[in-house]
Length: 474
Image 1: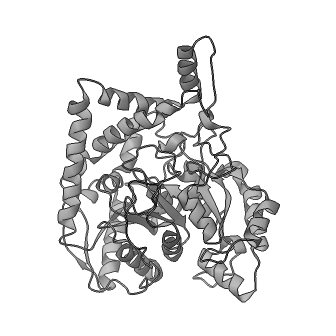
Image 2: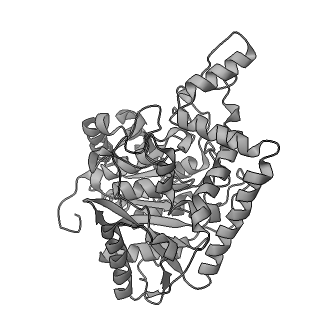
Image 3: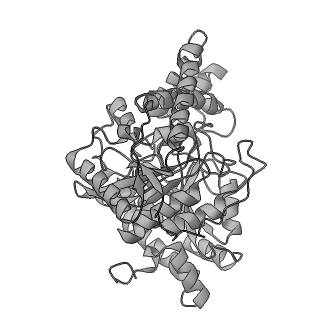
């Protein structure tokens, strides 16, 4: 049952609730699979959250034979940017529309070892490039709360699937807010871990120094549960941190009494009256729970968006050079080798991807490297130092996840600069490499509005503890 005492359908339950039902013998995984497929059949033609769905009989068999573990019997939706052995992985792009990987990403392998199985692959902005999930070559994802609004990007398919109860939990990727922004727009929990805490092996790269895989879930406990499964050192990933995995579920209910929290001045400016009211309510709520608030500043925040796009586009231009029609991609043109390269990339890559490749290539070109990319890296260091100084004074930062709730489909698609500013409260976290979580924080304009909490690197346990305290008392 939910907080109101209403009985929940199996596909509406959390992973930890299902685990308890499985343990008691009240429910079998096949019943959950059936409920999820029924929800997908009923809604997804309109929502467009999935690009590939595993057949029901095949998924039931996988779960019946799954090893015992903390996610035993749980079907998991996986963003279609993460490699899945034998299951099509498109990155939301026509250039990879028929690509089937030969191996599982480390996070997928860990999910399977924990008893889970892949339910399907979710829609996304092409190569993760977008804030609204309107850049997918397979069509936009619609928000379950208002079908005329965006689900957020780039992990919009994963967020919409969880919000519409077409998935129990899902994996997304966060390069500049791509887990947290759709979580906020769709009213679910989205966690971006510390850079290097979760292996990126098998994640098809957009911007290698920023990308991080994280869970989208129905509550904070499930976020902690999934993080405990996918976190940990991986020798296949040279950026992976060598440290023991923390038991994130332990101490989750310790509350926030005594925690020092801060609201960055720069993250509270320019909000609408209703959004500013939500922020004041969050502060009052945490104060009642025993947290102490201290004013903090992150003075280089105004430079975060241009810095992020300069660095991410430069890295994207290098990472996407491999999609040329020669190896595992779609192929266009056959008059010459150059003709094949040019036509393949022109016809099979979308306009936003081409825009970012061109910007990144220009920034890395001779004569401009130091002026643009080099300078952006210096500003990135200043942004990281802002967070370092803030966390000398506070344990957790509180901010909105986005300036507004979900906007209408097509509203910003012709204005890239306005679209990019949707990430103004999220990109700094990726530049600094610290963890953050978005949780439901009430409504603005009658739509979900995300409450974002940010902690110092490797402080996910403290972050989740604060998020759980708010969730359980809101």
